[in-house]
Each structure stands twice: as C-alpha cells, then as structure tokens.
Image (tube, rainbow, N blue to C red; front, top):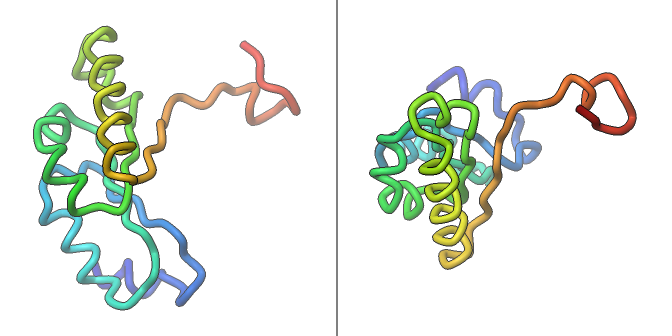
Length: 116
C-alpha cells in the first residue's frame, strides 16, 4: 500500500481502481492508504465472488468497474449479461458511476475508427 501512496500525485489522480475487490476491507484498505486524497475508489468486479458480495462493495466504493473479460472466464454469457444488467441498475439506484471494461479491439489502437 505504501507504494500506492508514493505513486499518487497530490490532487492529480481522479480515480483508483481496485482489481479483484471481493470484500469491503479491500476498498477500505485503499481508502485508508490514500488518506486525504480526493481520488474516487472504483471496485473492479472481476470474479463471481465479487458479484456475490456486491452489496458490500457498492456501499464501500465510489463506483464500479465490471470486468467482462475476467467474468466471462467464470460465467456463461447469459448469466454474465444478467449480472451486468443487475449491477448497472444497482449503481444507477445508488447514484454511483459504473464502467464496463471489455476487450479492446486491435483496430481501436491502430486505426482512427474501430472496426472488426
């Protein structure tokens, strides 16, 4: 955690993503480490366990990132879509931002317009 604090430029970081956040303590540990920073903490939902503990995570975090690439390794596509919809709905009800992280297409890196 001390490495995180030393890398955090004062006042220049808007968000900190916490990968593989499973419990509230994962979020509070980062919040305690950054102290008075105004950076918002985003819990990354990477595992089925994160989904099971989602209510705990949404209350502790300032926002959510749904990592579809990791989740599709653990869930069938149909269940992933339902979970994603539920998470987005819960974030809207709580007034917290929700980001969807998916695979980046190579064309998004090399071309001015993305295409398959």
